Length: 591
Ligand code: GLC
Image (tube, rainbow, N blue to C red; front, side):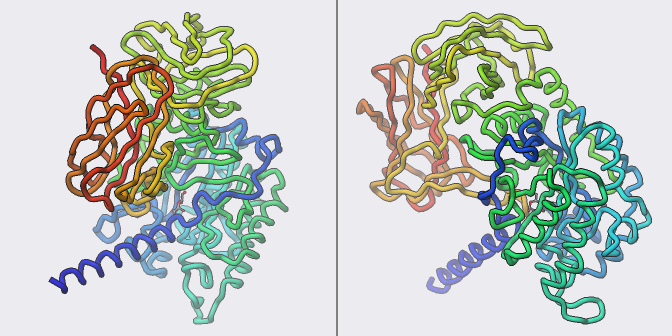
């Protein structure tokens, strides 16, 4: 028995250590706030202010490997295929592999045209990823697409020329710290080909800084340089990297992942879209499928509606979105990504006023049917879920409404509404004008004033995430984990439910009656939850747990008087350590 417990403990400790190592390797600097957040009105910031939506392109030798190496498929982010936890490809084999790389179908014109038709304002290409292979003609290092492959063309030059022609912005991803093939670099070999010891300073002088010089001087004006994974690189080198950009491209932004708060803006965690407004200049980066770099098996594409929701929620939270495509080994964007992006582009062409140059939602979080963005006195209500009874409810608007119009392909339909102190009810047509997201434009009178409290939508109810709870005796924190290697997921959870722990959510209801309560949680075994309102109504029930977050019904609870309330959840019985709550759903019961 003792041996089994010891073995289990060792297994657990190793698991924790491995997970730690993974997260440090693939995303330690995420969400690092930069102290230098550019003012939104600076020249550099224009690309963020007006743009809001960009194309991220991961493309390299790894794209031709496509996560299939020597007959074996590796699941995870494709650009990490060389790394020891993926195929562990030796440096010399990777270098030899370059002689087979021939992405002959690469056509900069088609790609830039696609980005443009998709509504994206700039493109950021991986000029050198962690494998150290330069996707342009580098004069300082032969491991590049012109000198080391039969392809021989400089795609960066082709892209830069096309971007200029088609008036699309351009930015460069450059892995400044991690370089698996450069002697002296972080996670690179310690000796060069002649067996000579190399240190970090050598790597900086011989490869990183000269290559940064090249990409910031040879391809015309660029919008930004996107550094990645600074890890523990000495601060003086991070400063040098940022300085090269500032010297050669004074109008370009330096990304936050340069490290040490030296960037102009913050990049959140990979694939992370926040659920609450974030101040300052920031971006989210997400993928059209699961991997950044092309992976042959990865057909898990995001639909146009999913992508559109990601774009709009990022903008509504105050940020800019960069959506990734992994070009395949031939240099082309996979068909499904193309179709989804173009479909989103069509929507944006109809409603550009909702995407470009707009401000975050005054509600600071999504609403049950969709989201809101603001442009001066105008609010744009973006509705994903059309109501069956033709009513759309907007809670908490304190300002007056001058006009309300439903937009549809340049046709505007005036919408009537009834406004009470804390709720506006709009009378919509029975069918939504748009299959993905319909837009209601409100012009407000006076100052824009909003009560940001969560309100139970009379039709839909509301799901309030754990992040918005006031908690006591338990722990509330963001949880980040990898689904496949390098594929990150983020959510907020309340965990470690001691016997006196509780979580309380504030909300508003507009009518009395019964409400169905569901709790979204993970855990081990059966758990007894108690739910109590500020009016003293209580329900209690036992439900099983799942290892992934799932919603479990607890029961109906009565709200006696409409208005502001709160609801408190406690764990009465069950495995307290493993229980982890992600949010609560309150749905009105209709009779
Ligand atoms: C992480 C990954 C890297 C990827 C980047 C995209 O840093 O390690 O491979 O390019 O995220 O945001």
